[in-house]
Image (cartoon, rainbow, N blue to C red; front, side):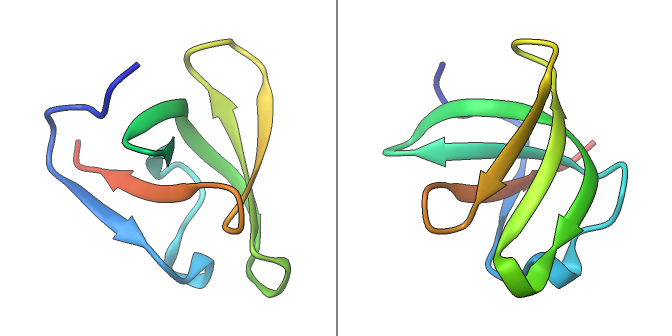
Length: 72
């Protein structure tokens, strides 16, 4: 899946994410996960989302994905 056409902002510090924020996890401009934030661990560089694409909970690590906030 390619990146959405909605305005997005790259998240470099997970401390800025809040529960309920819509995000995409991308690698090489391809969306691997998209969903709403359920929890974060900024010190570990990890966020958990409810993935809209697959319907399950996904753990996203900043070392593996670019995290982008999607405007509503």
